[in-house]
Image (cartoon, rainbow, N blue to C red; front, side, top):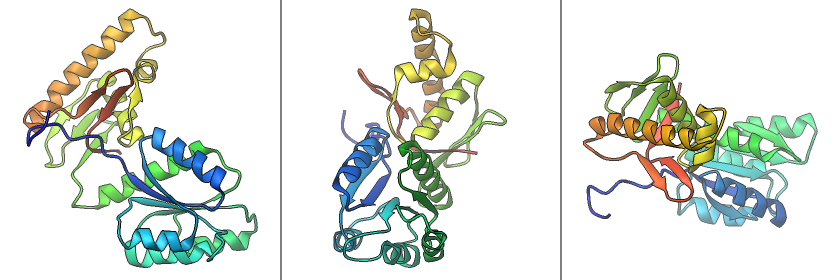
Length: 237
């Protein structure tokens, strides 16, 4: 479908990854793409500067030990001119290295080797924080405590426990596609035909509720053979 009434695609946060270790860069980029990020990888500070003057990124991952410039210089640039959230990754275990990164404006410093999941959690939180504070980004807000979803224009919709759990998973995925089996595991202890049908029923009801606030626009998209994604910025409080 195309045209003004076509559903928008999932919101893929853009991350610039600056890492001169080719194997690590490739592995992290692949991991983040699968998790729902759009990744641009550079190996040098020169490549970094060439990119950021032409393109906008939601978050940055910067290696401290680049071959042509101290990574802290890149962090300082992003913090002072772009206000882009930054995660620094480094093999330098001294306290001085971490302090320099944080003083330059880094939001977090991860020591190598680190778990990719730790980086993913940090990036999602930084993206959610930035989008929630940006009035130009239409953001849906999920209040899990009272099981209520708030639209960008302030309208609210009450949720069932299952619907709230589903939206919590969509918020954590930050626009990425969640496999069907993962959503089923969120709701049920088993994955038989009954649970598959129940998931479909929950998705249909949730689509109807959201459609009443969007004029019929479908925010829950189906990737056939893969799973579901939420086609808007969604943060959980």
